[in-house]
Length: 219
Length: 252
Image (cartoon, rainbow over all chains, first blue to last red; front, top):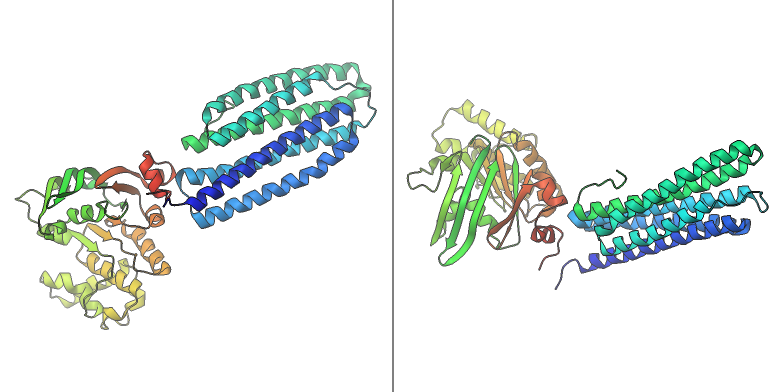
């Protein structure tokens, strides 16, 4: 009879829940970007409301991990599995917060603002969505071959962000009356950039799980 | 040579036809706690009993290789085991105080060695009981029987008895498996204090205990030493999958 069957099942369930949370987080950002493009204030309010559910899920997962650590006294890889479960969940919660922050920007911009949404916003978000999928797969299979890909993709997001901020700065110089709108645009770009950083963290956490030591993918 | 209490080289051991240990190589550092873990029948107790040659009491046993204690091979036919008997103490699974007073238990070894001086014996008993962290509990009843104490106290008396011989190594064979959790933690605390003066080698089935008390951990399986490394590493990121499976409880 195999030992630790029950514990293994609980680890499996935990991972499945975290992967679902990652999907939810991605959807939150997708909806936030759509709402930003459509100046959909109503949708933005809804995303902010839905974020509470993600916060709650984070708390629930952390509590489950704590109970598993206390009752199962895991060591080595099992212990790292549980530690990264907490860390990944924390990253996901922060990522969802960024979707919420973009929704707040959408509300600030209002329904009939004068500026068009910068195309880089969508491009950055598209890369971030792919990053979530890759991280989620890497986590599912506990496979670090994906981790470096995340770092490359994060570089793309960072580069686009840098270029976009430069452009926005020029725009503010020429259109001082639009500063408040352009600021919201810059904030939104920043939120996506941070969102992608958190996914890179998840890549590092998976690296730690497998190798048993820390690794900085941002280096 | 100064760094290690034991240097075991290519140790093989047979009980009759059955080989119980295969090519064990291990350097056991001085003034550290070394834990030996592994499933039942893996050879860990056999190995421990090889370190003081107690295993030779088993009929038909044969040991090959070298077991250097402080640089001297104890398996060499010219080696006199008397030194081992005084310098290597042992504590067993079940506390086994003699049916004598607490005082007599601790003074036993010294008396056998011919020490008769009363104040010297008293000093030795007090020092040993203090080091075994049981002095405060028994100082007012040194002349009562040791067998009337609780299991945890009896085990610390046995540790005091071992200490009174002024050993430099203490072997412990599952010293807390018959104790309740609080007594177990007391003995674990004591082990931490003892390593200042002694080299401790402890066989334990309790993996949390190994991870709590030891500096080095050796994992034995089917008579082989699978892995021997810093305890921090063994319990966080072991090198061998068999070690990982065992410490994670994914075994068999």
